[in-house]
Image (cartoon, rainbow, N blue to C red):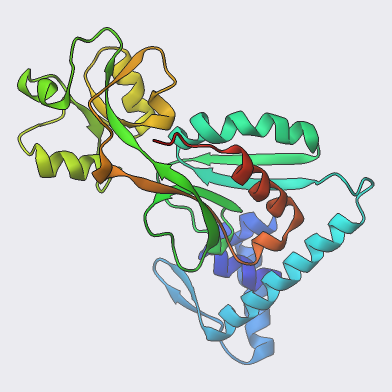
Length: 283
């Protein structure tokens, strides 16, 4: 069951081996033995990896339930029932991590010192279905249907300039030909990029960055102006908002997990804590 679950989640022998603590050849031999015993293939071998068949997916679902039950049993035998232990893997963007998530974790770990955190900060979506992470905190208008969670509130944005800039409005920035800092191809459908292309198609950003946190740092250094989330930019003394909030760019911040993971004590504890502690600016 462990072998099948690891290969369903990983998709390759090497990555499944990393999850199991063995090499890929061991996973291959174990899989051959399992399939011989069952008298049928569980996976389709392709150039990109191992694609699970229906039986493999059903076995993986049973294995996930067993995994959850084992972890629940481990929680029962903790020396202190009031403390939660284990590793919780959180994936989000660097912007959300530094501005909202990380500031909340110190108090949580002080309450539960046996908790450890694996923090993945990237713009690449992590597959919670394969348990690449336990919790995802993402800005989206439509979270994936196979995940469960709750909205933490709207992410409001506006144009921000360096504190000492004399700009007074978005139109002022456009007329003066001020340099713009904007997301690069790593964020092709970012709401701010779609808004700029729709309303100011002639603007060619002078600086393209792979994260919104980097955009804020560039603006603070005086490189130009950028559309930034209020939760990140408004508290900073080196940035200043010009013009009203851009309603067209508003998205929701979601706290998400896999349906099976939410019953794990360590995951449920962190989910509940973050839902209470993360606050977004309101109008």
